[in-house]
Amino acid sequence: EILIVDDHPLMCDALALTLKISFGLKSVRTARSLAAAQEQIRRQGAPDAVILDLNLPDARGAEGLVTLRRQIPGVPITMISADLENAMISVAMAAGAQGYISKSLGREALVDSLRRMWNGERVTPDSYEPEQASEEDAARAELARRFASLTPQQMKILRLICQGKANKEISYELSIAEATVKPHITAIMSKINARRRTQAVLLANSIRLFAP
Image 1 (tube, one colour):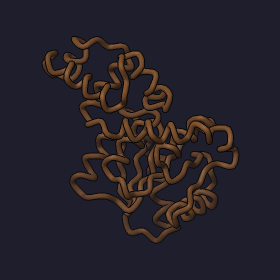
Image 2 (cartoon, helix red, strand yellow):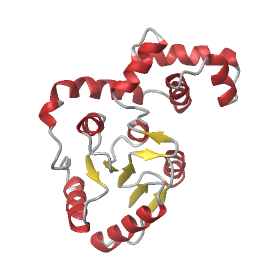
Image 3 (cartoon, helix red, strand yellow):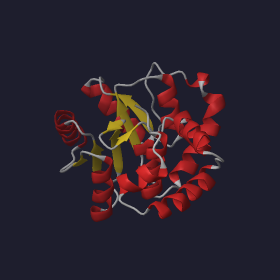
């Protein structure tokens, strides 16, 4: 069973239809946001594979991948996006994606890429040049593992920190007591090995955790 996480209804429907026809699937699960995908996985169990849009309403950049990797560590996750920038692909692959494919792929190329990935191959676009980023991949992978250790609440707080929000604003946005924000931030800093908020922001930006 395949789970497609994409907020564009037409893209979602077209992809689901392609999978049903090409792989003989009776049903394909879909979710329109990261939160909806997480809730569906909790209710229905882990799918056999995930196709994940890079930019969702509640997760942009590597956040969706890092979050789902933590929830379903053994399930292959394919990133799909119109963004084919070398650095973004490198981050996604270092963070544990099984592959990264372009939204502009034709049906045959898409099906071939997915088939190869689901057979265990790591697949990237032809334009990707891994040698440009290979030196940084180990560091990115380690960083992604650290960010994946954050709880959902800590990830929300980190996202707000990256937006420049003060503790009082964070408590207001998440409807939690201001006194509980500081312990969360202390835990976040410890998990990602950062000393200051600015360093935490730089680390998050370095793996495009909340990429615009």
